[in-house]
Length: 308
Image 1 (cartoon, rainbow, N blue to C red):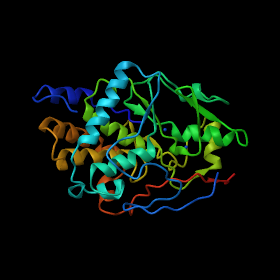
Image 2 (image 1 turned 180 degrees about the horizontal axis):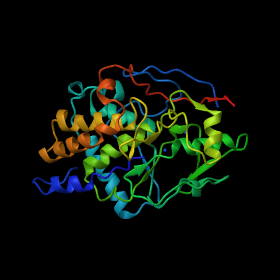
Image 3 (image 1 turned 180 degrees about the vertical axis):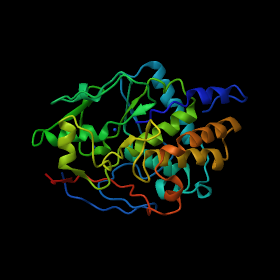
Image 4 (image 1 turned 90 degrees about the vertical axis):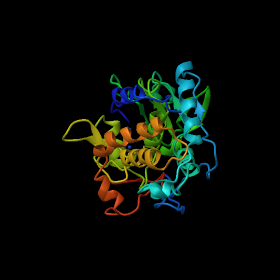
């Protein structure tokens, strides 16, 4: 979930000139090789290209639908030289916007409204998720997958646009737009979706104990499945792992600020403001970019490890 409020800072920027921008833990493991980082299993999706392939749920409001379409169009149009940005190729598997699009197409498939809870769409054993605070967007994909796993051998599907959709891994890729998403500029919205996409990754598979903890209403211990945030000493949410969603958030923000050749000055400023704001929420971002923790594992696995 991306819940830090950038809105006031971005409104200050918008008043300084220029037009507006357009910124949530079975099967056989397989291996896949990519050009960036390491990939571990079951990574279906587009191999690249120029278009983001999203399914917009019919319950989206007109404002939400217009907003997400506009921000994704802006993301597709950005001309980025990722070789100028530390960590960009390691995360996205290349140095251009087409690589960012491939990253998204593997991890984000369905866009829900802020008013749509995923559990209301599950055919079997719905569970309640917490709500009641402001956020940009959230990705419950690992928990949707957990619901499916814990009900095996019965089949669980999720209903989207009146159609039952199979749930095979955390890469189901469901993102809820938050209540402040539509109030943000297109650059911040685009960065938000890039951030949320990382929450679809379960690189080493899930632990049975973690799924049971979730079912019992307990917080996670191992946060790798879903690349889950934790609470920081300074307050607010942050990454507790290197190469987490806030690190990807920071890298993509810097790409817009420093390596986008067709961005307006305001759009570059919006990228830099976001980078400044999320830098401390990333886990040791400079050590990460300097290779202290190795390359990111950008893969995904359907494996459930029985550690009970």
